[in-house]
Amino acid sequence: MSLALDRQPAVAAAEGPLPIDFLVVGAQKCGTTWIHHVLSQHPDVFIPPAKELHFFNRAPVPGREQGWYAAQFADAAPGQLRGECTPNYLWNHVDPRDEKVPGEFHDFAPRLAELRPQLRLVATLRNPVDRAVSAFHHHINQGRIPPDASILDHLWVLGIASMGMYARHLRHWFAAFGREPLLVLVYEEDIAPDEAKANTARRLFAHLGAAPFEVPSLYEQLNARRSFLAMRLARRLPPSSLAGRAVRRGVEGVTPRQIDRLFRFEVSAGERAELAKLFAPYRCELEELLGRRVPWQ
Image 1 (cartoon, helix red, strand yellow):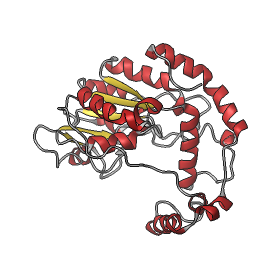
Image 2 (image 1 turned 30 degrees about the vertical axis):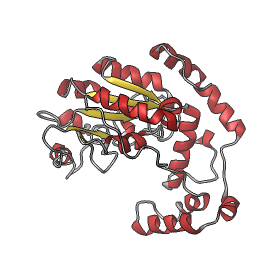
Image 3 (image 1 turned 90 degrees about the vertical axis):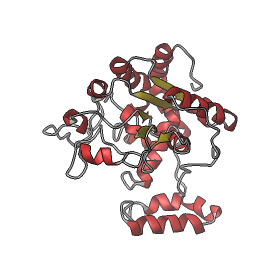
Image 4 (image 1 turned 135 degrees about the vertical axis):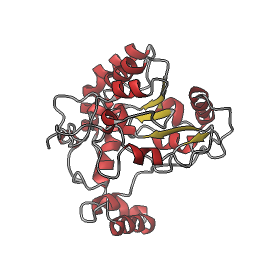
């Protein structure tokens, strides 16, 4: 794949004020769906129902220019804080080994800071080994990677490895906005444990400048892993088709677990160990940058 160099990200051509007060920038597969769910319940916050607008990191196409982006917030009430959640926004450091993604842009934070210097930002991080495995399964479910492939053969596609090099991404955002506007959460400490969720919601609202609010719905399981059979079917039923989605959801709903296990595939312990070795120096880099320990080795 090659990067489309003759086009610019939407933010490069943006004119006038952007209609947002905050962004949830990622990382992908680190709890951003839960954050979106929580923010959508606050009466003083407007976040579009459609998660992942991909406005700033993609080249504009007809019908998805700045006017389209503004229209995503047209239903916001006066005084509501407006923002959106696209977990690929955090991904700005591209490793030299990465295959380029056509039309994907990574260096837009400086321009965004020029246009909206008061923007509030939220990032969430997760054990990069678990994040990479979850992303690997996601891309299998989307039909982009064969289900019996080795994750080690796909590290440098679609950011599977490089999205987990968190310190390099955060440095880019810190350089553009400073450190204070960016709230950094850790999935294993702030989102996964039920006992942490209410406090994390309070921290989110305080960081964005929203009034305190008791969220009615905090504990639903979101983005559960697809069944093994459904993920295998993704290679034959395109995820973008309504028929493909309907069939695979139906399969998930009626396939007993003992049957689904027959279609099982796994990232092995040896592959996880190789991933841990890959990410070890980046963990140290992250801890030094944040001045705190992270709960993964």
